[in-house]
Amino acid sequence: MDMDNKRWKTLKSEYLIRRPWLTARRDAVQLPNGVVNDEFYVLEYPDWINVIAITADGHFVFVKQYRYALDLDSVELCAGVIEPGEEPIEGAKRELLEETGYGGGKWEEIMTIGQNPSTCNNWTHCFLATGVERLSDQHLDRTEDIDVVLLTRDEVLKMMRNDELKQALMLAPLWRYFAEGF
Image (cartoon, rainbow, N blue to C red; front, side, top):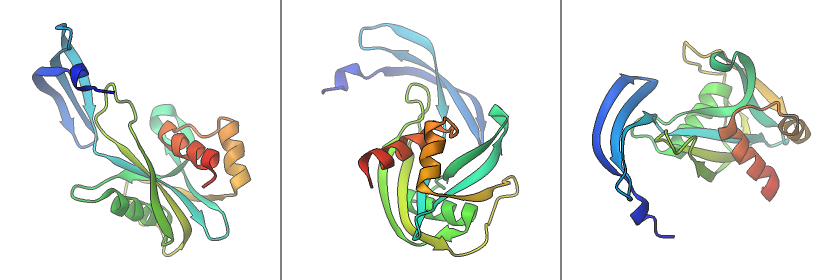
């Protein structure tokens, strides 16, 4: 499908806030039909990664941490920000090691998704790492309080079916993993 005729033209762009974890801008845009929207908001984020990590004995490596915005203890895949100049695979391996102490194994990128393409400008690169093993202790940032949780395949599926996993950017690759029988 040819999308070139659907592109919007940016007429003006203004940053409203620029902070390490929140950058927002207001653009004036013109749609292909000529309509002008003077207030289109974009949230800028760096690209992210997440990792479905599975040990040699078949356990899924998850993390558990408190999520302030939703006020819940959340069980999640290992995830994080890709550092400037870092390739997605490098960021994924670094984040898994830092957050869980696990590494090694065989790696492949299984999908790249956007969290909300209507207002957010970043990508999430989703990786599958099989045969990972515990290589070290965690190396957490001072603002991280993360527990490592090892789950069986059945436990992960049960949590997915029971709506216990809440992060959509993590559920998408997990559902794909189970649907396609990786």
